[in-house]
Length: 99
Image (spheres, rainbow, N blue to C red):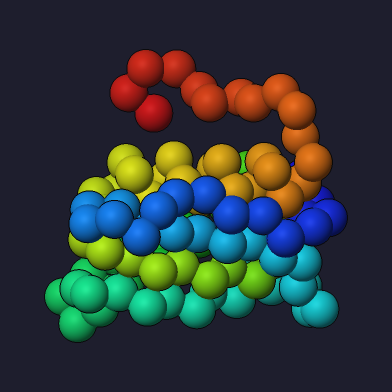
């Protein structure tokens, strides 16, 4: 999948994350994270974002994430939704139960 436009998913509510994905100028994933739990879980949040993008085949994107204590499942869902929107996809492959 190729990022074509800027798109976002999520909210700024407690236990959620706002993810904005934009096209990047290089061939890499750039992650800018602002999190209330940065010290404890910042590396884990970045890893979850990177792994989710990798699963979607995205290798070039700029990600801005504002986290308010979201669980991994919420982070994955927000990243996927923003990525599909940014790629202009109209049909989503969310995967089976437990993924």
